[in-house]
Length: 379
Image (tube, rainbow, N blue to C red; front, side):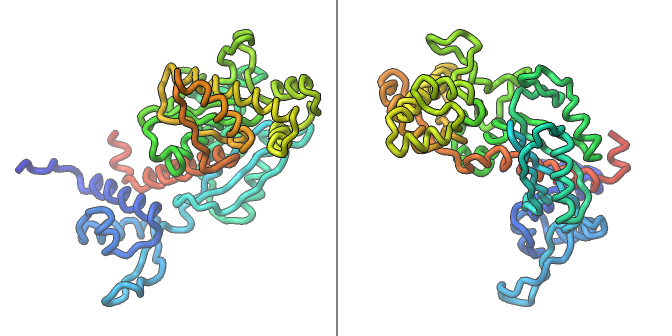
């Protein structure tokens, strides 16, 4: 039998410590015996690592297990003061902020519309500050989901053009912590991939309809962002008779459809869809056209990527929209079968994704602090 590779004991303890912390984050408070079972480590290794984690204030006592037969055993859990991470979802109208701990539990939450003439960075900072009044602890990082194209360095390209990372850098300075900026639809797809409808799918495309239409694409269990972050900008896929680059679905398109069908152009997409569900003929005509356009977008994606399913989120998951999509997809089925399923998280999917990514990054930050300085400096 091959001998295991030898390595520094500090490195082995660090790797074992990561395994134990991940298990506690996933399962909650556990006894020493339960940690042995969950991690596959020996009782001696678990005891040694817990001693290291306790001295680093990474874990703390969490009561006693009185349900298992035999002497009562003490439980340990992640230390409540390990730190916090902010998860932020920004849309065209408001910002929604939650603070999460390393387990992913939400500790505080605030949501508010952007002021008419306010700065969105300051607005987000104010919401984070309000959350921090509710729960104590250092803010280690923030994950922010925004509409628009996000480059690898966190720069945003939206209707005003590229910002060169100005939003990310300014927010990081004001919050005094690292900030990661991500496309909101990509975060929604990550939420579905890790804990939602997409968890059982090898590949899928999430189609989220809000102010505009975007896609989060997962291939073989991995989110596909594209070389420059453009992957998923499906609102601009060409559709006859629209010119190349014209939006096929979104607020502006729906306003035009409302005018063409004699409905109030100031109503939201969901208000038109509500009217369609209630039987309004003009609204039904709008829903039919919206469903046709969304289904053609899905068909274009299917011909290139052939995902297992399409997850509909936001207004795309409205019952009237689901009916319209199903009707048009049935017409295409002989040539191009398409499978549609509904998001597990609805409009909150981007925030759920941001919270999951924030908690994961927070745990990674904790792990890096536990790595002995001698190991860090030697690399």
